[in-house]
Length: 300
Image (cartoon, rainbow, N blue to C red; front, side):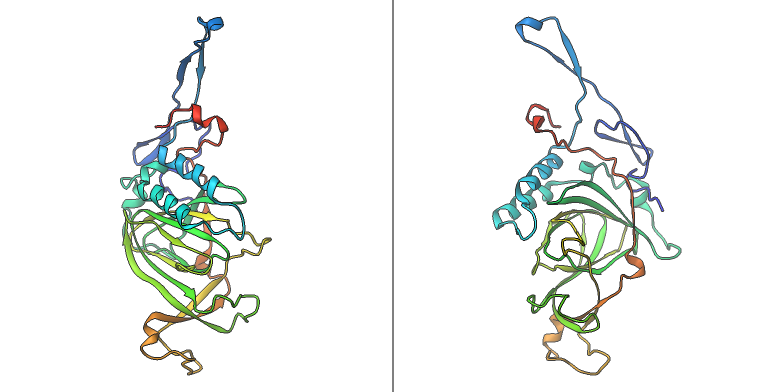
């Protein structure tokens, strides 16, 4: 299924410049920048150079991520976390070629079957990835974890309910605990967020590493993930079912009092839920500049 999320599903070639919104879809137009060669030996020569034009904040995000994320087992220090949050807090939907006027974000009403989540990748390497997730109204990204990852989430458009947990005993790993066994988790968040709002950050063992997204209205979320998922490197995604504030079916309270139960939940690892499957589409928004010559290019 191809979702018209900001025109990301449109096929196009030679995308060189900023996005223009026409008829609720994202279009791209080429712009030629002319520069004079001012060297004494080439005074009469003129050269046309085509440069991508990119929102400054998007380029800043990419450059900062490249500097900050150092690979597995590396959690960014507080100063770097603050730097990325400051950049993301300034980001708008238009910086990645989206607008709330697009048809996808105006759609309302019942959807036949389970709404599908769509995602697109702006950039990915071994150290980090920049992705956008598009959730139709009532779509859900099921409760899942981020092993060994630091993740920055910026809600660009829409209203979303987020529930997240952290393990009470983060020293236990999924490798040592049977999938059928419950693990105690501390409820980190259980709130509704509406764009624009502050960037949220989760860490390998804190900040709500296990979370679930439910779209109240159509949403777009930009995620900065470092490092990305990798089954080969032990960073596979696991899914969970939660039993908040209630005894498990076996009738045992398992060490949590009635009062404590308000802020805790039992999590059970489950097989990949049917609703976890997503559709991937090509990113056709403003393109980041990876060239080391970036310092010579004018950024919008």
